Image 1 (cartoon, rainbow, N blue to C red):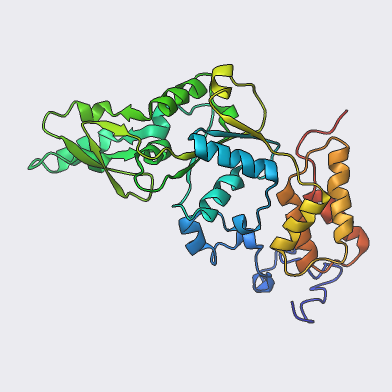
Image 2: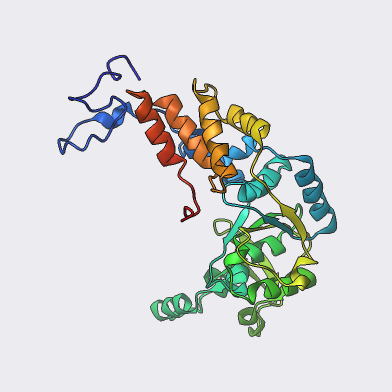
Length: 331
């Protein structure tokens, strides 16, 4: 911001306000500072195309995490990563792909309605029928209406393995973990819609990678390179023993004071003068049993670096808003 920007726009409105609540149109959006690196969509497109998360460069891992990731890679077993929100569970998958030079991470976001088929493939039978009604001269290619899901695409990969992020597996229904085990153990799955075809030995279907084509022979996808599977859980449920024994289990904790300093230094070229105050507030919340995510602290520091508070009281107020605990306050 320039010196003129630091002056209050009108009356007692703080200088850092862009939206002022006055109801009067103005061009204040031009004063907006550069975005945080992890929200810079314009400059991260090329990186996002390959790995999906540029913040992996600043990702910090400890020895236990490195050892267990390597164990999962060697054993071709899923890595079940459990931890509170903001501990870096999902980012770990992108960090693995980035460091190993693998293709973009395949991400499957789990909800209570997710089924195994959702992850394997989707067949648009209605779309194919509509296309047939528009053009009676030929039968539409079934491959144009069948797309592998993130799990299906990961299993179909050849050459280097893919990284598959199955996010928030603890939000699934009770059957999905067991269904996944069958596919992970067999390393293959069938597509009945293709197996019913009489005259199609090999069909090229769309993948989860922006429509890239993958050949499927005799309606069966056979795994050649087992993917690096990262399943994340917030610890909101317990899993069956049969599921757990087939996973490498990693429990992620919030970074300690030294690790958090390294994370912050990796994200910011310039640090606020009150950094210790922000770190103290963050760790005080955790010591009191209240959950605050790492990215909340990074957001608070970004505001401290880019904004010019009019008073210490204002700085504290904004900091407390951004560092608001994720779990309900104790009565």
